Length: 414
Ligand SMILES: Nc1nc2c(ncn2[C@@H]2O[C@H](COP(=O)(O)OP(=O)(O)OP(=O)(O)O)[C@@H](O)[C@H]2O)c(=O)[nH]1
Ligand SMILES: [Mg+2]
Image: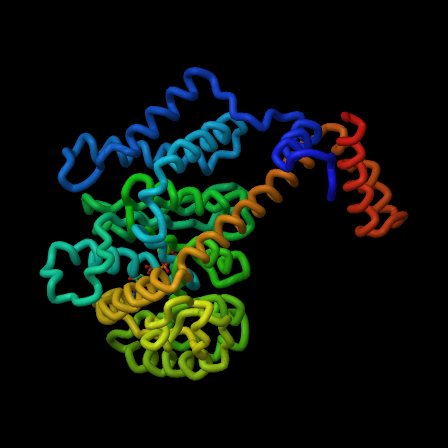
């Protein structure tokens, strides 16, 4: 749609002013700007193990404040969040796909996601304390600070959320190089919102070079987690192999690694059987050219992922978050993936696509929200809805009329 002639940015700005009567440029009060500057300074300050407890605590508090800002729906806080993200972005050359990793973990309620985050987190943080010379290839990327963002299911009725995940990660929560943050998913339909993507980049700005995003569920909305991370792990319970044909099919198709958890005690045999069923079913999944998967050993030799056309299928692993069995294999898989994805350019391209995905998502959300709040459009909406209720117009025509009134409103203000 051509709104007016001229430079695309000016065109967008004038569209924004005319439609939303808002200033596209950020203008914060002196106090707000000071607050943002102080958060930025504390986030950038060294919060590593060698810094003193005060500095580390300051950085954690600043990171929490920053995430609260990006999650906020208040217009003034949103402007502060924009300014904060822009300032941190300027020093973002340090935090890119070459120096950080984003892991997404999704799965049905109670499958053991938090227990896995706790055990896996401790495993990788202890990694650098161990004799790394024995770890071969893994030395290429050694995560030394870990952030875990747990997206809680929110009640759409009360807006409340169960912030219990921190207690289920009791060991990790107290680790000096870990940051655990439960976030409500209120406001977005699923577990993930544009702010989750921003929260990940805030953690990276604070030097957390490995971020895990945990989200509950296996529905369409959790599929969006794939747009937030470099590698997407789907955690599954023993006994659910046949569900691949049913409710979980969509999410299984986007998962990079399938992990069957609780392979211990009485459940071990069943977990092994389930993993075999998933392996067989995974053979049928088609993946795009250059996608990473089980044929990793050959594809890691590829110079560019565009030239890698292996018939890759998702890896299926067996694990017990309780006993820790299988965690080293999961870590090795992640490191191997990272090596391939980094070298072949797959990771960089994936992150670029994700940036665009969230740009559009954010724009759509803002457009919808602002349209819903516009007083003139609200009035028109009452008339249109009345006609719709009386079956004078079809939903499609109603949407067209609403859109015409949005665009007409813009033109009138010209
Ligand atoms: N036997 C066994 N139990 C496990 C394992 N992992 C987790 N559990 C148990 O499963 C239950 C749920 O674990 P959580 O880690 O809270 O599961 P979750 O997927 O994070 O749960 P939600 O966040 O509520 O969806 C707890 O009682 C854990 O002790 C495992 O590997 N083996
Ligand atoms: Mg959990």
